Image 1 (cartoon, helix red, strand yellow):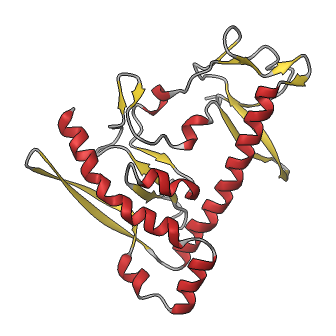
Image 2 (tube, one colour):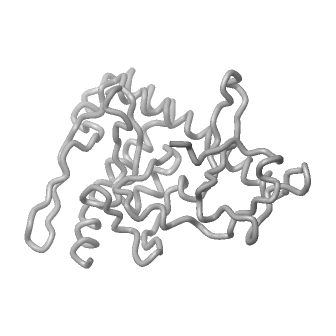
Amino acid sequence: MTSPMKALNATEHKNVKIKQELHIEGTKNQQVLPLLVHEFAKAGSAMPVIFIRPSEEDKNVVQPASLLGLKPEENLFYKDGKWVGEYLPAVVTHHPFAMVPTQGEENRLQMLINESSPLVNDADGDALFDGEEQTDYLKNRMESLSNYFGSMQVTREFCDHLVQKELLIEQTLSVEINGEKVQLNGLLLVDEKKLSEMSDEDYLVLRQRGFLAPIYAHLGSLHHANKLAKLRAEA
C-alpha cells in the first residue's frame, strides 16, 4: 500500500491548501497519543502520562504517551467530533505534516504531508505556495515542526536514560467503574522504589539533565486514571 505521507514540494503541492481546523476525528479510536517530554506538566494535569513500546521487537525503545481510554481503540476525550479534554497533545496540532531527517542527509530535515488528510484540498484554507515561493503560513508551520522535531530528540534522550537506569517497569493501574473494578495491565511506569534507591550520583544526573520534573509530572498524573473511569461511567 502506498504511504499517504509525501515529501512536500512546490511542483506536486503548488495548489494545496490546508483547512483552518484541527483533525480531531483522527483521534477518535486512539487509546494513546505520543507526547513530548516538554508536555508532561500540562498533559499530566489533565490525563495519565505513561510509557509504551512502539514495537515489541525492540524492548529498549519506549515512547511517552497520554492514556486516553481504558480499552483498545477508546478515546474518552473524544465526543461528537470534538475534543473534550483539558489538554490536546501537540502531535494533533501538527497534522497533516511531519518532519523527518532526509534520507542520506541525516542533518537536513524534510517536511512531509499526509495527502489523504481531510484537511488537505485545493479549495479552502491556507495556501502552501505562491508560485514557487513558500507562503508565510508554510514557513510558520515548518518552524513549528522543526521545534517539535528538536523536542522529539530530547524526549528520546530522556527515555533512553530511563531505560538505561532500569527505572521503567510494567505495572497495573486499577480503577472502579460503577462498582466494578477494571485493570489496565502492562503499563510502563517509573518505579518509585528504584527512583528513591538511586545513588546520589545518579539522582544528581537526573536533576542536572532536567529529567526530575517530567518524572514527577508523570507519577503525579497517574491519579487521572480515575478521571477516565468517570468519563467511561458517564458515557
